[in-house]
Picture 1 (spheres, one colour):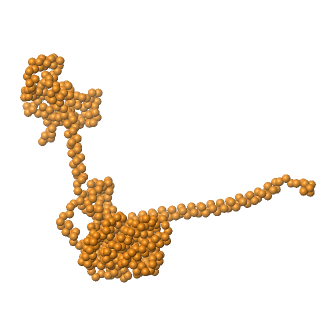
Picture 2 (tube, rainbow, N blue to C red):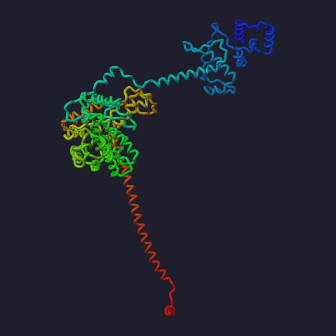
Picture 3 (tube, rainbow, N blue to C red):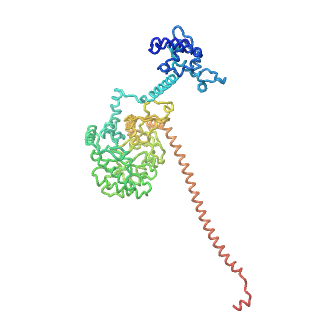
Length: 621
């Protein structure tokens, strides 16, 4: 190969070694012998096989010698046709040893050693230029097959890293200074001088004192909060600085904590619990909350009555009464307020009679420190009519007759996604659920509710506008609104902490709390005071809100109807089984009697079948 021999000769001239000078004559003889034997590479390819240059090429010389080297151009580079490049890349079929044409991966699998060598030489010489053409360097005869594959893997890794970087981009935009200042401004001003004190269950994250400013932010005249985490048992004690700051903030913003602050108890606590260890754990947490109320100057404390679980209702009420009696004796001023419930399962408080029976078990000296909170969604789901004016008045009369209106201390204002009597606790925004705006007109114009804290627990979670979906499926998903603002607050707190987690494919987009919802609903409820329900203004507002929740109501109504059908089929099936058992019992008893009669008749026949004695035998007897 002339080109390679000339290059090696030049290299030897530039870097002569002592051994090469002293052995030039023997090398000439070896050169002639090599040419005679058919070795066209010359002396430089056979001599100095121990050198580093020879070691790097030794594995390729025998293979490369079979192929002629292309003639060099005047510039030292040679342009490779695009067709040859396509052959190397598998774009054009190449004939193999068997005469078959193959492309792509199949072509690569059937290449001979010579073809691999040719590919290595061409791949090593191909470099993209500015015009997108491919150039081949004359001097690149070192094996580049491995390097070419490594280059391909590096490019692939770089593309994957680039893709990963794109996926790891921040999904949320940072808030600007103007946005932060806008958030600090109240969403609505508080309305002073009203007889009804409407507010919402606000966050107390990073200190109970923050609940005060959060209530001011939405224009509330009352508020609820969690005194500690409602989803775990172990909580740090109330800090003195937080206690003092809460009291100071209430004075500064003119909130009377003894009247218009209604903390909510932990969901973990069940004072009707039958298990003694769990009952003690729940009671300790309950008592600690009551003590926190007294430290903060709060008089009212709302909590769920609990559940009977596997025990009877009467025994559960007895345990609840004992726990309340002990807690009242251990505190001085705080008033436990039991919330009406939806009546699901063995939950206490679905029927108003449950509270009547409970009060009968508590010593009368503590009755002035016991209260009831009516949750509009819960009582409606339990079956009470709060929509029609007549039904609402019937509910109030039953409350007064069974419990006494003096025990009514607070209200939770929530519409219901589920129909009346469904026993499902699904909160909806005011006017959009099955209660509708008319039910809240009844509430806001009830004289007996004046001066009571009215707390919104309606859903406020909305799609996060700063979230960038990673795929079209996720972008088209609708947000999941929590049914209860209380239960969603823990998740909102985690979102605010900025914890990142991998979202599974098809997951719903994240949501953030929109406190404008509560600000608007507070103003809406306050506007109902004194409004004529037959006026055009009220009817237009009622129709607008009803239309907003129409699709959700239709979906829940369909679920409820299907549940009623399934329950009816189950009831009929159980009735048929009972009737079948009754028939079996009846016929079984009849068969027994019939069998007894046959046995009785069989005996005389046996007697009649005996041998008849003769007259002489009878006379001898």
